Image 1 (tube, rainbow, N blue to C red):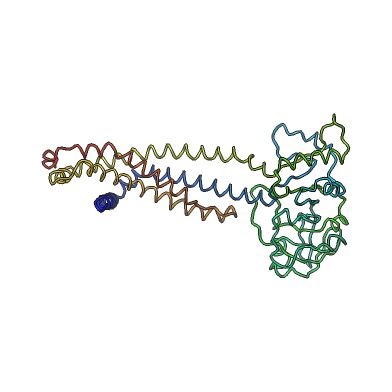
Image 2 (cartoon, rainbow, N blue to C red):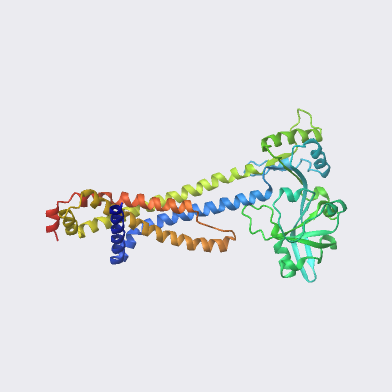
Length: 416
């Protein structure tokens, strides 16, 4: 065991010595490895970070949740908007009937969405998202109150003029988010509302999900005092119960909605049942394409880098020919010589990979600041990059290492 550790340590010292002795030559030769590892780690890290951000955004819609809407979510060149626009919008009364007809659902809520203004003193904000919702909305969506409280049942029953502000809205109106509590703001048509809560800061969404930072929440009954229901993009949210699959929920909802709207067996559905969990499949081809592009560039760079490392090892073997002969003369076996040069080649690739990893780490800090969502390097990608460096190093150094291992000690000692 100690012998193998000594071989590894010796090879590592030789790799460092080679890098210190010929910095420019070694770096230029390792540039392909550095760029290849940079491409692999940067692409995979960015994709992993984006996938996590997208998954978190989808969770904001609610897990195992079906959105009943007139519109089918998703797009494309063949999207039949002309067909969906003629459909009737979901109604609040339909939501109440669904609670009776689909008792296995965990939570059912009704939501409205419109744009309006929010004013306080001399500060005026326009184009603010108004979300007016019924009970259970906060049980489906991920809403965390940072200051104050959420709506109570009495607020829903009476249509109390209360409002919960998004973090960014509260900051822009009052300077600090916590300063919004208890203040009275003006909404659409000059209607007053008291701020009872502020949502914690959410951050930027990649898929355009509920942007709570720049929104306000109201009860459905209060928002109906300012907007007609059919003009505020109504939607019904239904979350599957424990042990209930989304497929089973969709089947129940389809039968219930057809019954509520009194559709005959020959009539097609005039509503859409949008499975939020299925939206994640829409992004799979995008991420797959990005992966293929990153791996293609990385593979080309690694091949170029492998030839550069092989060139270094050929030069190294020629420069150390007399040392190799001396080692073999005092008893060093072919396997030891072979292992030393293979490990040295692998360590050189690891040095190039470490430079690429450092560049990616700096890039993640820049992207995190620009994109406003965390970009990170997963541990499994780092381990994979090290494995690629080892494999590339062994592959690049195998021919020079065999040449060194098969040298005749007498001829090698006499060489200059």
